[in-house]
Length: 157
Image 1 (spheres, helix red, strand yellow):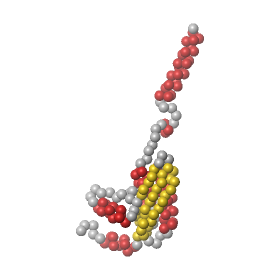
Image 2 (spheres, helix red, strand yellow):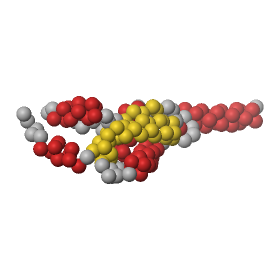
Image 3 (spheres, rainbow, N blue to C red):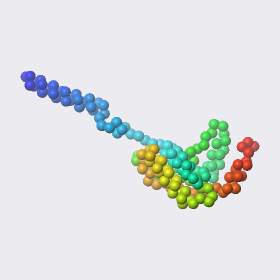
Image 4 (cartoon, rainbow, N blue to C red):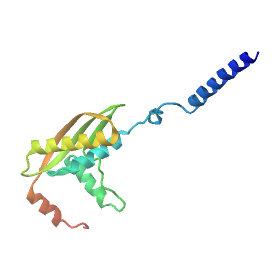
């Protein structure tokens, strides 16, 4: 009878150890649960990374930049870092479309390559997502005399 009780105690003790482990979840804490990343998060990261590249004057089409300039001048309005960026985010991959304005005199192919590299590095480092493609549309070239005209316009009319 003593042997049987000892046997039961061993079984109970082993079960309690296993039960305690399974109640705490077991395994790597980093693998418990799911992380989702919104499209807007990836768009912000990509927009900031693209703007950091020398030769990129602005992001977005002429119309979106015009509306953005009006919004920027409204008290409390903030500059949209997602202007000119569209992201499609899956569980492990993302694809990006960027619309940029380059400065006159720069190599568009070099700026595009640098934007692609900077965006991919930033998005993959910060999100862990694989960037499968970065499509870049150059919608305008900013001429030096256009910058002077913009600066001469008064802020208040």
